[in-house]
Length: 74
Image (tube, rainbow, N blue to C red; front, side):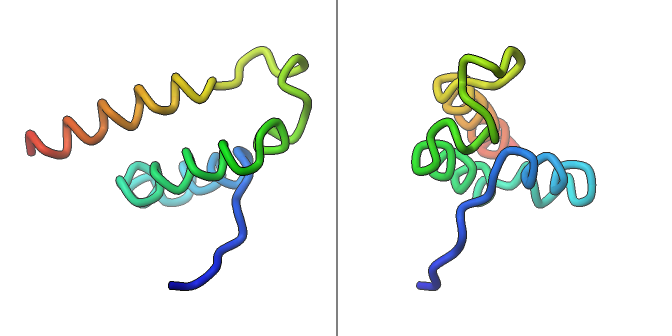
């Protein structure tokens, strides 16, 4: 297994704009959750208290659950 550098939210937003299919894949969503946990507030590039529109870890987990459920129903 290769080591990969954790991505920030802005890097994931770039991916969403440029490669939406890849961004919404289960693999990338799982990586995003892991990166959020590993990076903490650095994931958003600013202190959590300064980010008014950020997704919480719980929001990301709910999104992942919904995407996984939709994928299973396809």
